[in-house]
Image (cartoon, rainbow, N blue to C red; front, top):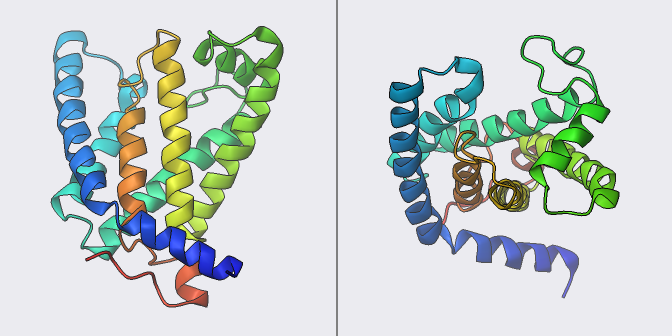
Length: 214
């Protein structure tokens, strides 16, 4: 079996999980809407502390409502996921400004290492810098491939697994993943992997767009 045939087989298998992906997406959208509404009514938080679920939940809901059948909705969702990864990637490299600047989460890699220690509080301190480097490579790769639309199905599954890993690490460390909608992002990326999100993509330029699952 050639590599191309193997990749094609994997992508077909991914597309076959569409029903499960969208059932999970609907469940997480509902949970996220309920939590975000309750949290906002009770705490009146600053937008900067909940902008991920506020921005991402309507997009995920649109994907769920259209069942992935509207190509531009799926593509917009893919691009938003890619942007989220890429923004975080360049933030820790200092491209968005110094630590403490408005809209900057870390501002340099040392602050990101400290954040990695918080998210992986269960992990030995000695491996935290390595985890920070691996996370940066993974997020940069997912961000670029999702924005470019290179092997959309595989990039989307990789994004889903990365979000899932991040969310689970937060839960194990006693942090709130729902405040950032990370599990919702994970299942949304999974749903994107099962439909045609290949508009504005490298995939569309070099080969026929992947057909949507029936």
